[in-house]
Length: 105
Length: 409
Ligand SMILES: Cc1cc2nc3c(=O)[nH]c(=O)nc-3n(C[C@H](O)[C@H](O)[C@H](O)COP(=O)(O)OP(=O)(O)OC[C@H]3O[C@@H](n4cnc5c(N)ncnc54)[C@H](O)[C@@H]3O)c2cc1C
Image (spheres, rainbow over the protein chains, first blue to last red):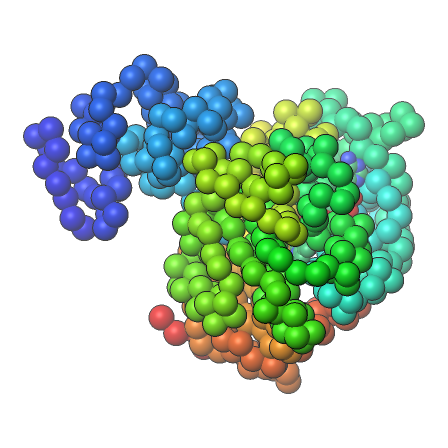
């Protein structure tokens, strides 16, 4: 299992660079990860998404899908594509230190 | 008298009452099942209708034929579920009180979730085969279609029978080749996922099959709306995919009544314990089959395997005993690939579909993730098995728990 030193801590990552220990995540790490994928700075809108993803993961044990973010948190899918361009589901999870959402089988 | 109420007499609900009636003492238990209409559909058969392989009559039977003696069948739309009052209301105002409730209302295609879809005219070239009427209309369209670009797309995950759109694509390729029209047809398969299937080993095999059939693939294509006037799918990232004929898998939603009762997730599927199907909210409520939010396929095979587990557990649960069996997420799907061949995948929550052999005494072995004639016959035989064994809760030589026997890592 590869690790990386981020913000002075050893962080466990998988082959694709996603954090594997969600509890190691801090806002500082989130900011760092966002910069890795070209999102800089993280605005209040980004943080709203990240906070929802984090708290929903605590409650559900799974990373929210785009549809879940739009229905439950009320942040539209179009906006998610603007905030996290290209592949928002992956990018949101990556920045939030969570596994990528499984598009259930 | 204790009352068990089952909502939905599709695959899962029908197997539930067939398995539980013999296990629950008729002197103590009253069992009631509700469905909105009188006709049971063999939904896997919808796939074959656009190609004229099955007709309407091949996939319809009266529901009552599959409901055992000693179970009351109520016909009517379920309008309200009140988990506090333990009461369900059916259209016309009839109340059904229960001690235990099993939700088996499935999941269904809902075009209204995609802007531009619902308002589109019939002649706009937008089709789907996830309902019987839709499959029949597509049969009529294919018969006279001159050719052009056929786009097969998936709107949202999860949806029932995750391999059905791939199968449709394979069969379309075969069908046009048989008629010497393949050169007039470009086929594109578009999915919101990054791969053609959610599990890596199977995705690799299936990508190979798509390539060999010259089917183009568009990944990460998450549809925002249909532009019916222009004849194009528009994705959230701005990409546009023009079609002459669109065959879509609309967003699948669980029953609206589940959502109104506050029992559903963002797609109206019911959150349950993935091993026992007990609701995460109510101790006297279970959800089985497609209605449940489970991290495995929404498929008839899953409905069948999971109900076997549920039927073992339920009589113990109501006695206050521990539920001993836990569902492992076992799914088993034939994938029809055209030219009289098919593939087979077998997997569960923890093990992705792998290549190898699937043993079946007397008939098998079937080859996993490989196109064979035997797999095609397995798929075609399944309809007989469905009507005669599966729905009636009879023994099928397919164990509920997945086995690693024959699989290759
Ligand atoms: C095109 C297609 C191909 C498929 N191919 C395969 C395959 O090859 N293999 C496989 O294993 N599976 C396949 N499936 C999936 C399979 O058909 C379903 O997974 C299975 O039927 C699920 O059973 P269920 O009981 O959960 O839901 P269903 O069988 O859909 O039953 C739900 C029932 O609830 C009733 N209902 C819903 N809401 C209400 C209400 N408000 N009031 C009253 N009644 C209500 C409905 O009328 C319905 O009868 C396919 C499905 C489709 C559409």
